[in-house]
Image (cartoon, rainbow, N blue to C red; front, side, top):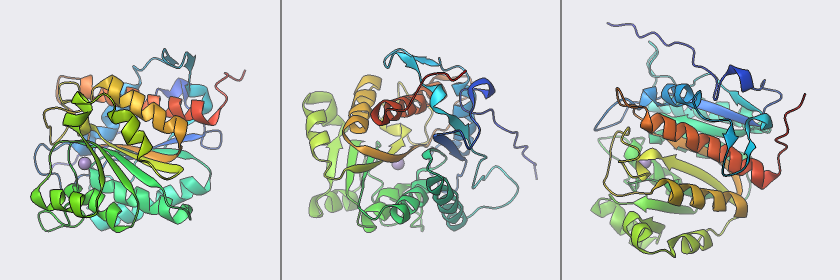
Length: 307
Ligand SMILES: [Mn+2]
């Protein structure tokens, strides 16, 4: 058997601007777990690729007109790592993810999870359920509904993650959907669930106002499956689908959610790097920096560089 070396990743943006854990407001949590992907494999390498690509992200955000890193960004060690020699089951991954996040929440950190396959989100959302007595909306950017009860014999398949969250009783908002099976279509109608299809996003300019208005809770958790983005911009995903959000629809929608709601946490999932192209991981890394920047603006965090 080939022993795969798991080398230590660089911190998000680079060691030069990394905060210590106690200083950090933001924690990047890599979860390089892959067990149930069904088409192109490789998402267990997603977090490392994003961290490496982040070394090339400009510190100054030209949209927000300031450097964001002084808010304090700490990169956690990977959890539920399927690249290691120890087998990690879906149940172990969920338990480890939830336990790690519970501690980070208790320490007052704003956490961005990096996947890894989308099933990880169940563990993250479980931790926020424990920490929040009031309900929050899970806003999902994705090409797929992920609403199957089970897939290929597992209820923890990545194609089932939003069904687990609907079963928790949390409100959801799905953005960019363009691939669902009959079971999912029936569930969307019968519940009914709030879904904005990719087609309507491309063709109806008022979609964003309507989507924002549909969020009924003050608190929001964001789960971003990178395949929600147009695959010409984001080819490095396991299950690409034609259509999808462009960069400006995505970032302006995300920014407005941060401005209008209390975003309690985020994840960026399913990056499966492509050899000889850095477009996908760089776009994902820039998106992560945007999430931090939008939260910094919304919360009024100090971005002054302390001397
Ligand atoms: Mn998904």
